[in-house]
Image 1 (cartoon, helix red, strand yellow):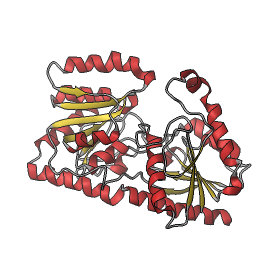
Image 2: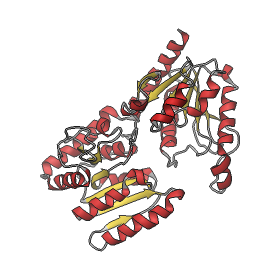
Image 3: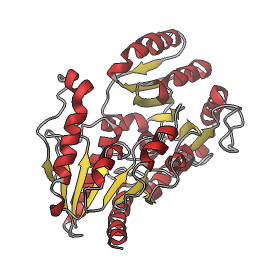
Image 4: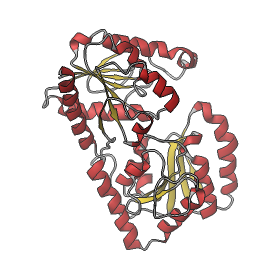
Length: 382
């Protein structure tokens, strides 16, 4: 099988990548490369010119250096389209295209000129009104197939040509190792944007008075929000509770923080299609307390690997163990974890590790993608 994997041209794909989609790209490509020869797969990655991958890289010799802000903000789509054009202009060299760019929208207008199957892994949330109108323009294309990264992601667009749901996987053997004990502090990490719930996390810390560590990944367009809302609130809370903060820590450097925290708090405020931090935390043995939004009910086992909380009395997603909702529900879940007898808490940490080993390993993810590649090729022939 001659496989072309299309990625964004904006972000370097390497072991130091911080953006979620490109973290997935790196995990997929590097681990697929390990089994490629055995399964007779040749891989070409279309990606930014400074990417570091163990496969052939095709680029348009442009990438964001961090200094090209005007180009990045105003005209980078042109370079994305150039890379896509380069990939599709070589279609005689490939049997299958695997697209990892948003939800695939940018490639749809090209697809009718491509005589090969195109598999799209959907990486984002779907805006129902926009998506239904835009995707409908291309509903007759027979060569586009979709992989969802959670079942909840499909709700906005249930009638697409889905092949499978494949959950993200991580390296539980080398990178995310288990600690059966944990420690006494509450942990949060993620992009420093309102939707990730950092402001909610700080309110829970204030109410429960638990020691905490927070590790925001900075987004330039949200610096003002971070300064005005988060830092002000954190400074007030710090007068009564210890909060350690550090910025832009690499995900592998966070492993020891996962391993030694009491719990990971994830009060997301949007329908997140998949949360890598949730499985990274559980792989290290740390239970998760999270709002029941997006993929959370598919990733967390309520009462077994943490607690799921309904976002509000007007937004009930399930009959969870914690009956309170919103911030009060999060606080109750936090207090319940801290009050657990040591033997029960250690059992929950073991449950977290086992849950990830059974459902969210990189080996399982790669195996499922290999099966999907074959399935798409067979379906397209028909």
